[in-house]
Amino acid sequence: MTAQQSPTTWRALLAAHHPLLLPCAHDALSARLIALAGFPAYSIGGYPLVGARHALPDIGLVGYGEMSAGMRDIMAATRLPVLIDADDGYGDVKNVARTVRGYEAMGAAAIFIEDQRAPKRCGHMAGKDVIPAEIMEAKLRAAAAARADAGTFLVARTDARAMHGLDDALRRAERYLKAGADGIFVEAPENLDELARIGAAFRHVPQIANMLEGGRTPLVPPAELYAMGFAIAAYPTTLLFRVVRTMEKALADLKAGQLSLAGEGVGFDDFKRITGYGDWSSIEDRFGG
Image (cartoon, rainbow, N blue to C red; front, side):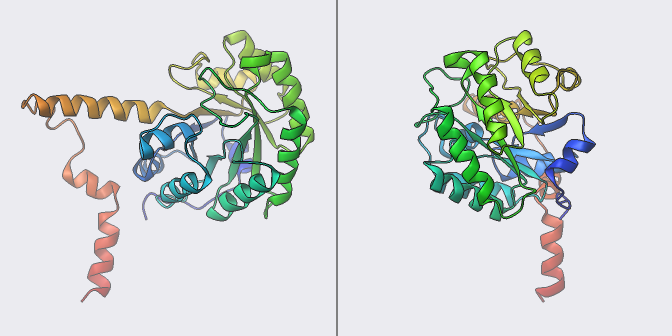
């Protein structure tokens, strides 16, 4: 279909894009739109998926079964390479291995796992905690061993900055690399100096800068992030937050009986194009008699 492209490896994407921009899909339609917009890859984050699919906050209320069902639906909309948020792996080392095997079998090109203590929550929320570094190291070794394809890119995320400071987060990141991670994600630095310090500390390793609107980390243009040392700029809430605001405005318009926003959305034909109507219609014409 028009939204699909041939899959490629995560390392090839990193070599070709400086930085790799990752809009985050919260449902299948947003994934399709990301592909149609010409992005080479995307991500699926726990925060937007849980919010959009279940209308719940990202505070550990949704487990692997529900998350993987949502991931599968989203990934069916496009063959673009995807980075999957695997939260804390949903348990101990055996659960981590199952999670990695499951997402890899679904087609994930990259997966990240965090060192939060269950029940985990959004990395920019208060009240989170982290597990001992040695437990996370064991999870990462299990994750690396569980991969059927060594090219599946494994990212280790640490949330230690909020509880134990940046020094501890950087030490953990170093340990996680030695345990088998291919990339690093230090979550929720709180100012430009911290971003620069993280980028410089692991400049030789692919790193994620999480540009969560309204979060603890300042929003920095992609070129500046790359200059700091970040290979990936992720945007977990950008699409979802704008969609929610648009729906609120449309509902207020309907409630007032004004329809003043009529014509501001996509047209009927545009939506048929986006959802692949022409492809399905051609199947009907060819095989349906």
